Image 1 (cartoon, helix red, strand yellow):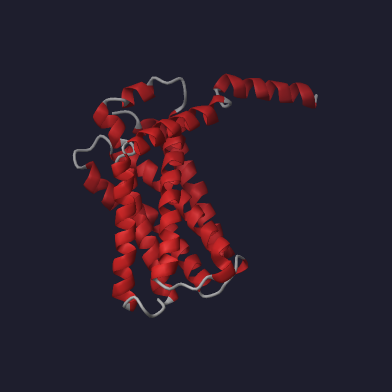
Image 2: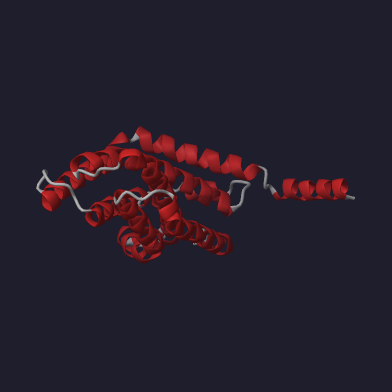
Length: 244
C-alpha cells in the first residue's frame, strides 16, 4: 500500500511542476547574474560604496588606530550590508518592469514562486560577494580580533544575507510598478528587515566578544524563524504581486 501511494504522490508532484521548480529558479538566477556581471559597473559601484563606508567608519569610530568596540563593529557591518542590499534590490524586479521583460517571465510555464526564488538566489549571491569583501576589510580597518571565530561570523553573515535577500526580493516585487519605486523600496525595507538586522547585529556582537556558535543559537533561531515566516507570506501573496 505504501509504494502505490508514494507513486501517486510523485505523479501528482510531477504534474504540478514541482520538479521543474528548482531548475526554473536556477535559470532565472543565472540570467540575472549574467546580466549583472555583464554590466560590471553596477557591482563595482556597490563594492566601492562598501569599501568607502568601511574606511570612513574606521576613522570615525577609532581614528584608524584603536580597536573598535564590539557593539560599534557589529552595527557597522550590518548597516553597510543593509544599504548595500538597497542598492542590490533596487534593480531586481524594476529592471524587468522597465525593460518590458516581465511579460516574458509571466508567460513561463512555472509558478510565480519560481520567479521569486530565482530573484532570491540572485540577491543572495550578490550579497555574499559584498560580504566577502566587507568582512575582511572590516576585520582589518575596524581592528576586530576574531581569531578562530571567523567561521561563526561567516555563518551569521550568510544567514543574515539570505534573510535580507528574501525580504529585499519580495519588497522589490511589491514596488516594481510604482512611480517612485527606488524611494519606496528604501522606506519599506527598513521595517521589513528589522527582524533580520536585530538578531544579526546581536549575534555578530557576541562573536566579536569571543562567543562561539552555542552562544548565538537564539539569534540563529530568530533568523530561521523569520525565513519561515516570510516564506509563508510569499507563498500566500506573491502570485498577486505579479499582477499589475
